[in-house]
Length: 240
Image (cartoon, rainbow, N blue to C red; front, side, top):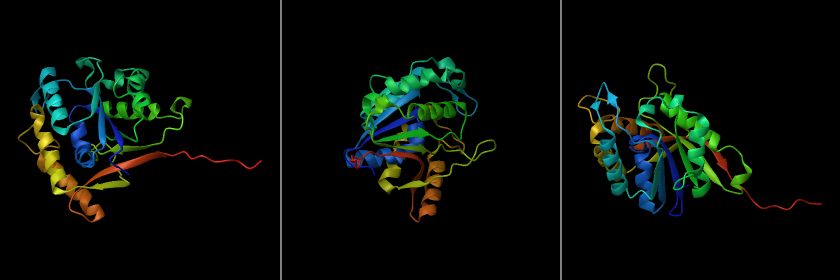
């Protein structure tokens, strides 16, 4: 499904979600020579009771360092203000949809990706808003022409907690030791998000999740995804 000619677009609520949910897939795709693009809604600082306070400058430096290290082929950041961080449910959906669809660098209509990855909705309001906007962006529309693509949701670590539904995958990507190491190295770049305690944003937790998903398909490590839609067209001639 992923080849050297693939263009992969990842919709990212917050800078670091792309590593948490898709780090192994990014490593695998870049290894093949595929192109990876990120549409990031927030690369902003915020106050966290668990991990202290990070600033906008910190988050941007970390994000750009990841972009360089992972050799990401293109990115866009939606400029809607730090005050909307963790309050994306207060932003009109049509504004998010329009940006995801039409922004100059990674807009869906401009990029015409082969694979689109959405954050699973089984998390807090920002993830739910980006998931809903992404699904709306991918609705049937004459502007898409005969564009063929696959749509999947990626897993957000921590789903299944009280109040969140379990993530139920139907597609798995086996990860090698090298893929896992790259995911760990990339997560390490987001220094402002580190915590000394056991938390979803620790390599220890991600390793356990990848091992658990690996057990589900009989390998050492894997990432889990949920395929939502496969759009494929073909030429045909109707009989008179």
